[in-house]
Image (tube, rainbow, N blue to C red):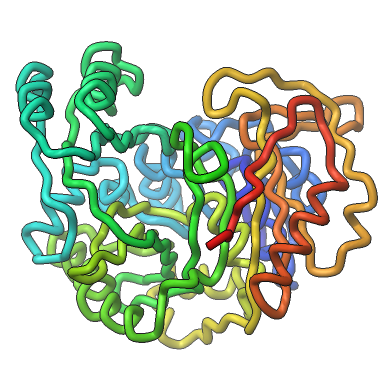
Length: 418
């Protein structure tokens, strides 16, 4: 079986590593891949947003199965195009991917089907948004409607911060068309939880819960990022809460999408807040979270490719999806300046990282240059450690981090601290 993975970040590296374990694979490609992915797949210099190039490559290389991992190509209809050419895919089609590509669509879906979420208002006019923000009780949350690389959400503690966020979206066009419409939401309080789930549109199978750390700096300070680290499982996500989420959120969501003619097949990401009034949805993503995937998938006890094939063919109920005991701690190593401007091209030293049992390093922003691995992005590496419990995993992850070095390397020191 010839398989291609679309994308080139840490999420795609962990997917590639675990998919490659399936013996039925003849050839594994990554488009475009990165320095780490090149160790397990042939990397092809085709952008994840180049849908024409992806389809052409799939046809000329007799690809049997494509895993479309990032949000942009999913929202652009990569799955629709590939399936139309007879190439089976893991990932939702364009209509189903709108659950992430439009936060307004997602909120209206939740309202219509009584799925618990924060109160909100929608704005297409800058002055009306500013007037509403001026009269709001703080904090409030300002969200760009469309995709914004994980940076389109601002928790505003006062009117000045809300004003800056609104103007950034609607006047400065920081996120392009994604910010032409915005949401202003109440700010929910409580522990935040991420639950990734496999679904074939008929059944839904949640994975191990996790806790993402989105702020750039220790103590949950600084700007939002794509994610600086993960603890899995989430300390606050009890079996009782999991049962409530399945009943009130997970099953109603896949049923709502099906009722809307948008059957969702792939990995559905639930961003949840555990409030005093119960769990509520902060956001949906239409794919594996990054870096959540780097912490959750190493705990999967089974055949990732087999599960993905079953999802595509609506056979998920027939396939065992199990996770092993233990815990993960994932620490992201970032370039100085991220999520703002940063420099790249710095050589990466890995020291004796290979000596650590249960530690895996997933490449996010790297490339090979004259055979040497160098930095090529804001989030460079994700160091994940698995152990019998979280304290042991955390200690191992931070010990392993000390082996790695590149110019400007920074990371949070409080992943999983509670």
